[in-house]
Each structure stands twice: as structure tokens, then as C-alpha cells.
Length: 238
Image (cartoon, rainbow, N blue to C red):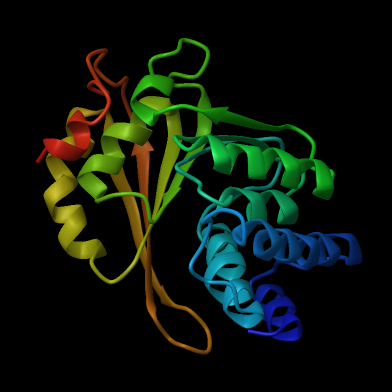
């Protein structure tokens, strides 16, 4: 996906980028490739692949969820900043919090944020299980996102405790979404969520399957969740 295709495809979905935003994406790509030589941030480094599989794919969350206005978003296990940093570029009023368990990724994201002059972006080196137990973060976010982090049953335990009541947990998934969601139904209910919608679409050009699973937080998450670090992955709530 070249830059013109990226711009045009987003425009079709009602997202029009100005010159500053396009420059931010350009610089994002440059820094991603530069830092990737020092640390493993992504296996995808080709210009057109990054624009399609990282930038466009991240922004696709906005096709189904309203990110306009000063809403708070927490991105769990964002890695090199996906999907939250592309969303922040497109929707500058968003308050972004990223939690990731690898310090080197947080170092990269801090430098990226400074370079792109992103305001109201906060980065925490922590495990999601621990992070969700802090009073200042637990059930405080309008939207919590996760992309390519873990199975849906695991993600639910990591993310739903961070979502405020009436807020949304948005899981970005590939072809196995249906199977994962079925296995996670009990966990979603137990942790205070309700499946609001499941959207399917294909990435432009390569036509690969993508799913957006949107879970609404309808009641408080029981205080014992999330369990201690590592437990959700070893013993998912299924």
C-alpha cells in the first residue's frame, strides 16, 4: 500500500489526513525501521507492508468505533505502538496510555512520541496483570485495545479490568476470531463484559481477513481478576 492508496482508502472511510499527519506517519515509518535494526520491534519493515499491515490495519478500528473527542484509550501490549499510535495520529485529541512488558519497547515509544510531538501519551513498563490492579488505572478507560497479543480468552482477563463501566474493549483479530470468541464467551461474562458487535472486513490489496470484536463493559470486574502474572496465559478462563 503506497501513501496515495493509504490516504485514499482512509478517505473512503471518512478519515482525511492533513500534511502534518502524513508527515507523522512518514517519520513513524523511518523511526520504526531505524530502531528495528537495534531491537526486534517488527518482522514487517517494507514501506508498503508497514503502511498496510501496521498503519492502515491499526486505524481500521476507527471504522467501527468512534474515537473522536477527548476519550481515553489504553493499549495493552502495544509493541511498536499498534494500534494506538496510528489512532492518535488520526485523532489527536485522544488520551493514549500504553502498557507493555518490555522496557526496550517503552524506550522506543517515548522517543517516538517526542519525535512526532504527540501530546497526552503515557507509557508504562508493566505486566497487564499488575497494571490493572493499580487504583489509578483500574476501570478508568473509555476504550481498551489489543492487537495480536494473545487469545481472546486471555485478552479478556488482561483488558476488561481496565475498561470503565459503559466503556469498550476492542480486540483486533485475524481469521481465528470466531473460534477464539466462542472459547472466551464465559470469560467475557464473568469479567463484566457483553459482546456488542463482531465486524469482519478484508484488508485492501491482499484481502486478508480481519475481525473487530467489540465488548461493552456492563458491570464491574470481580476484584480477584486479573490473576497473578502468567496465570491468564497458562490457565485461560474458558
